[in-house]
Amino acid sequence: MLNRALRACTIAASRLLNTNKAFISGLFCFLIVLTGCAYLGQSAADDFESQQTQIPKQYVSIWTSMRQGFALAPLESPMVAQQIQQYSASGNHFQETLTLAKPYLYFVLEEVKKRNMPTEIALLPFLESSFNVRRGKGVNPAGLWGLMPVAARHLNLLHTPFEDERRDIVRSTEAALDLMQELHTKFGDWHIALAAYNWGPGNMSKAIENNQRRKIPTNYLNLKMPIETMIFVPKLLALRKIIENPSTYKVTLPDIPNTPYFSLISVPRAIDINVVLKLAEISNDEFVDLNPAFNKTVIPAEKNQKILLPVNKVKRFEENYQQYDQALSQWRSVIVKSPQTLEALAKQWQVDINRTRQMNNLRMGIILQPGTMIMIPKPSLKNDPVSAQE
Image (cartoon, rainbow, N blue to C red; front, side, top):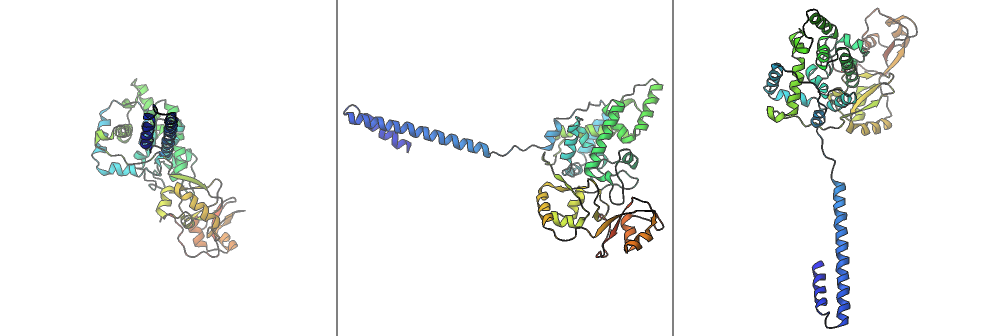
């Protein structure tokens, strides 16, 4: 179109010397060309602006975000290189373990960054649990952070028949980072604080005092520790080196985006886990991966009770919850008013004593104390299992 206009203007301009009419015609065509050029130029600009606004947000890997906060001092020890060699020689195990971190790593890393801690600390679950959130119970280390019962009590983590907060993703992370900050404040050195996390602060204090009496330096490499603790920090620093330069060590890091994987949902009423699965349209494995703290098939209605759901399932859960017209749970909670036996409570509420005892992990002959919450079956309850992860 533009070429035809230019050709017409050229012809008109060639006739300019012959007549005034030709001059006017040529001038008119020239103005048309200028107008057309201006129009086409603006159109191209609009198209460019439109393309710019349609460019998707640049993808950011969790590893890029993590590298920006690496801050632990290096450790001049051959143990770091030895641990790198072990990780590199482990084949797919190294990548598979990091892949297990996908649901949790964004949350953990953001919590670490909020506290201005070295971001290497977000990798501690790799050492403590291999990111296996279902690992451990009873007197053994449990959860992402491998917390022992004594540490859990120190950190005010609940342990009831229905829930073990050592395996709660959010609560255990908050507690573990509280402990790490406490240890860093006590010892003033991240290497020693990390070792104390593994060995216990009491043991670490004794090791330091022993070196002080002998007038030996009290830095990490001069302290006498069990081999498991001695290699704890080298393991973490080896992880950092691989994540800093994975290609150097012929390692491929799993693709984990720097975006939230889950959301917290408040649970104001008791709800059976199978109902949660139905409303959120997720599998039991998907639920347990995010909520491994729950020990039973029912989630009691407690103050500030929350569950975690994948971010892409929250809207579906909320929509289905609003439309759900059936009982959310086949169990109900009662509060013991005065000391009584389990037998007396079962008779009072006319419920099956064995199922009530099993659900609440109670022994026969126990005297229930005032204020104790007991879950009892509703009349319609069938012989359903009561353990969430059996």
